[in-house]
Image 1 (cartoon, rainbow, N blue to C red):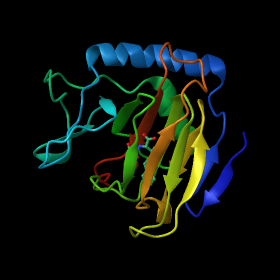
Image 2: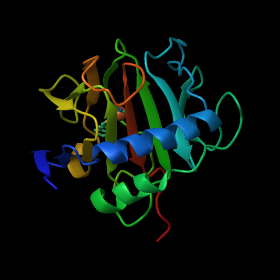
Image 3: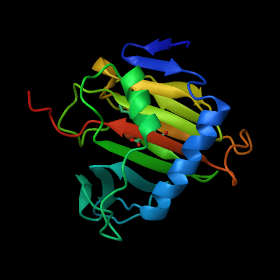
Length: 207
Ligand code: MD3
Ligand code: FE
C-alpha cells in the first residue's frame, strides 16, 4: 500500500479501498442512511443551509443548526440513535490511524456536483491527539489544505474514490475544504456526486 506524505501530519493512501470494497461500503452506507437519513445542516446563527447533506454513524454524530455545532448521540430530525460504524471502517481506522482507541464518530458527507465546503478547522472534538481519517467514494473532489492560521498558503489535492487521507499531529488543526466536485469522474454511485467519511475521536480516552 502506497502512503504519500503530503505535509507534516498529512498522509494520503490513493486507492486504499479497491472497487469491491468501495461497492460493499456503499451498500453498508445505504443501509445506514435508511436508518439515519441525510439531512440538510444549517449554519449557526444565520440558519443558512450547507450545500453538503450529512448524516452520521457511531456513538456520536456531528450536527450543525441555528444553535451551533456539536456532537450528539441522536439524529437531529428523527431522534433515533446513530447506526453503528461499519466494520470495514473500523478496520481502516486500525490500519491507518495509528491511534489505540476506536473512533466514536463517523460523519457522512454527500456532495452533489455543485456542492462545496469552505475552508474551516475541525475543533469541536475534545481530543486533538487523535487523528481524523477521511475516506472518499464516488466522484473525485478537489480538496484544499493550508496551515493552522486563516489566510495562509494552501495547496490543492485531488481525492478519488477509494482514497484515504489521515490528519494528525500539526495537521489536525489545519484549515481545509472542498473546492469542487469533478462530476462524472466515477461510476461507483448511482447518481453523480461524492461521499466523504470522516472517522474521529470526540472525547478524551479515560486513561
Ligand atoms: C484536515 N470534510 O467533514 S475530509 C469535514 O471531503 C470535512 O468532506 C471534507 O472537512 C470532505 O469536516 C474534507 C478531509 C479532512 C477531514 C478532517 C480534517 C481533512 C482534515 C481535520 C483536520 C485537518
Ligand atoms: Fe473539516
